[in-house]
Image (cartoon, rainbow, N blue to C red; front, side):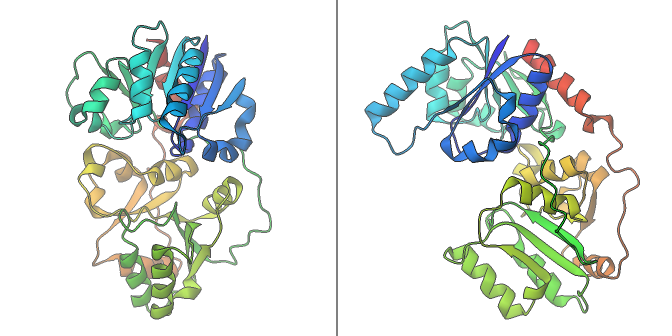
Length: 350
């Protein structure tokens, strides 16, 4: 059976490897259609695909975009199944699904925000073709059945082997890592900065902001100034260039805790997750998580929860080598490869 995984945006590359591994380990032949900006990020697992096709719909005229869609449609029409890695409110995905409406090719989608299924008109058009969706955590599954739509959860928490950096030395420090690009709209960095300043002794703590921080960007300048003004620069490890996958996973592998730092939002309690959760799950790391998110079952098992009032105490305890542990962390069978593979393939084959 032939499957195409399609990602026309420059996002969510982190979800591709798990799917490709599930499919190829079950002897599917898999091709990958990707945005050019993702191309360099898949170097460690190109071997999984029969063909990799770069598909760019940006910065081209309308006529060229139409021509691109027509060419892509002809190719997708030859597969048994097409999996849209981001099957949300995209005009390109909408158009492809509508033109494939009467094709024998089955289309399946990964939905990164379940709210789209009920609130988006574009999504309703996409769903004329896509009748099976994946969501990225059990708690996102809808509480009621949606007519003619089947929704199953799976966890894309498997990553290719990365080259170990034996020179990466923690120097007996305790690493707390915030993965991903700088994003003040989603993360409460100011709480973290103020907490580190308020801790009396933090000589054993290093905070890793594991994403590019450009001193030419507004947020980058804001961050660098804040660290300098608070005189806490020595507690932080920053990166002024793109963090490649090997470096990214080396730092995660050696981290003691992961900090999602999410701002409070009901959307993260009902409709979507942050990729930071899956990164922590993949590396089986304990998270320090805002108490607001305690109702999420996976976090109850794998997080230490804080409030604005007690975060300083928690960081101080960590600094004093009072490492916080969770005896029940990552004991659930859901974290096993075979369990996730079976769950994924059950929907693919249903």
